[in-house]
Length: 117
Image (tube, rainbow, N blue to C red; front, side):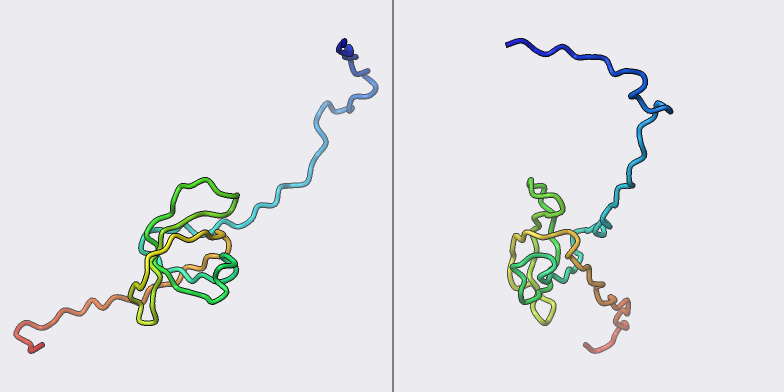
């Protein structure tokens, strides 16, 4: 089987400017905020279908496992109503569905010296 010979493009078929035609600009999705260990996250159905009932978690680390574009695995502590960890989980999340909660302010008050506790 022979390979067909390539024919040169005639000069009258090329664009007059010699440039590529303009294309529509690429629309980028907004990136999820940078996450750090210790961040408190609110996970709902937007983050993954497994969260039909929303939960709060504290991020341990983001895993570097290969996944679909825009999704990632993370190790987290699931938080109870009192804010304490109740279970450790590995969860599969969509970046755009994760909502970062601001932690409550930490009291900087020191106990007085000699005060009864």
